[in-house]
Length: 303
Ligand SMILES: Cc1cc2nc3c(=O)[nH]c(=O)nc-3n(C[C@H](O)[C@H](O)[C@H](O)COP(=O)(O)OP(=O)(O)OC[C@H]3O[C@@H](n4cnc5c(N)ncnc54)[C@H](O)[C@@H]3O)c2cc1C
Image 1 (spheres, rainbow, N blue to C red):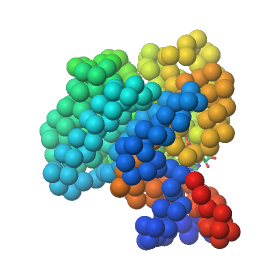
Image 2 (cartoon, protein in one colour; image 1 turned 135 degrees about the vertical axis):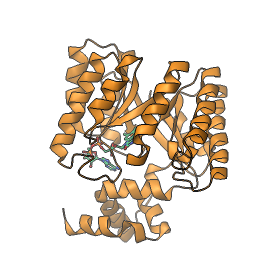
Image 3 (spheres, helix red, strand yellow; image 1 turned 120 degrees about the horizontal axis):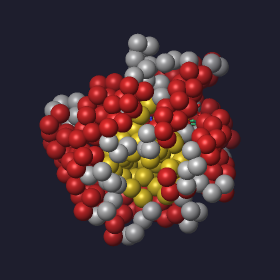
Image 4 (cartoon, protein in one colour; image 1 turned 180 degrees about the vertical axis):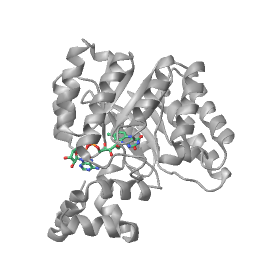
């Protein structure tokens, strides 16, 4: 790790928010749903689908969950009304999971039920270790009731990811597969990037064996290559899987994936609470901070 990257990782939580905003603005559509819809339409014109996410997580009072729940329902209704190529991503901690399981479950159920009424889809993001087991549990219950309208995510850095996948093998499976972004202990998660990548490939293969619909969420070119091999091996049709990427990350790879005939969905976060999300993105890739700093010093910043 270079000194610059090390410095970013040690100081990111103390960096003033205007500075983080400058570094991270490419990752967030804007403050309002209209901003997310605009980005969604721009992507749609290029044949790219979206998943919309209202930023805000780890709430500390139950009352905070209710406006977020309403935002999620507004997103679903906007997607339906405006016929957008999009679905919704939602964070369980935003619905109060860390305070009260039943409260969060009911909020998520209301959102997924509305999605089902509108023939939409809700992806429940996978957050850190405290949310892990409960998120799987909630997904298992909701997929019984709404099999075509809900999915969740698995993280290949987790040592127990394969166990969770096997547990889900007793019903229809719709999963986003990611490496994992949260800070976790070594007892819980692999540290070695090579192991995380190998586990990703093993999980993807097992998901295809189980007949899962998978959102292959990565910007790692090697994983794109390995996924293509597995798609061929299982003879999958275009509508049986999709690739997923984050807004602002590697548009060149994004265009390549689309040009090779695959479905691609971009994760579009928006909202006023962009700080936590942006800090995670910078921590993940301090090279972005380096590039933005260069732009700022040269006075050439811009979207
Ligand atoms: C659509 C989507 C949804 C996600 N949902 C979740 C979730 O629910 N739970 C969860 O824990 N994690 C989630 N993640 C994050 C994920 O866990 C990884 O942290 C992230 O995708 C980076 O892993 P990678 O597979 O791209 O591989 P990496 O090896 O990290 O990256 C591959 C290449 O992409 C570049 N790159 C990666 N990230 C960035 C970035 N932020 N900025 C610029 N370049 C970058 C790297 O520099 C490298 O060149 C999601 C990711 C995506 C794409």
